[in-house]
Image (cartoon, rainbow over all chains, first blue to last red; front, top):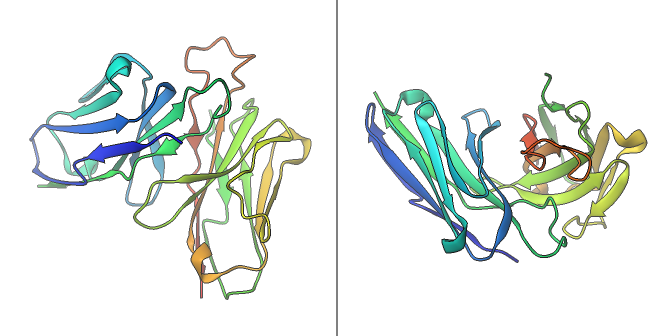
Length: 113
Length: 120
């Protein structure tokens, strides 16, 4: 199956700092999503981005499908950005993995005031 | 638009007991997923339904886990008997049916709040 690696595993920032989270995957994908898991465990959708670039407020994401990686940018971080950020992909394999998201191990982000 | 609903939010049981979790997907979403998230790890898919049929249950431990989605809407996941290693958060997700949706994010999955299970 497809492998998903996220880096860094942990990130500690001061409020106002910028950060970049990376997701590498081992095969072609149909779907790539970024999630934020808040301290209560809820997975919140950030981006659906199998390719290209998207922006939503202070967050933006870029997926370079041909090079098998995606980046999540957080600018002017706030304490409410703290939590775990997951990248998840659906492998492109002729339909066998249809709908099946494989998650990375996550990046734990802590933003201090 | 209401999100994915799950209940209960928390459950504590002793090993060898049985437990059931309920999920109601986003209205109109044909595909429903159950994931297991062990502490410190990313979620892992257990079973996937399209309408009321199973698409993939290859990762479901069928000797103790079962799931159903009667009438193609709500779903129930059951564990019987529970083991200590089943302690985890059980997440339900849903997505639009790829083949009938004209929306560009047709395969985006949306997750419920999860059920945190502790097996003692």
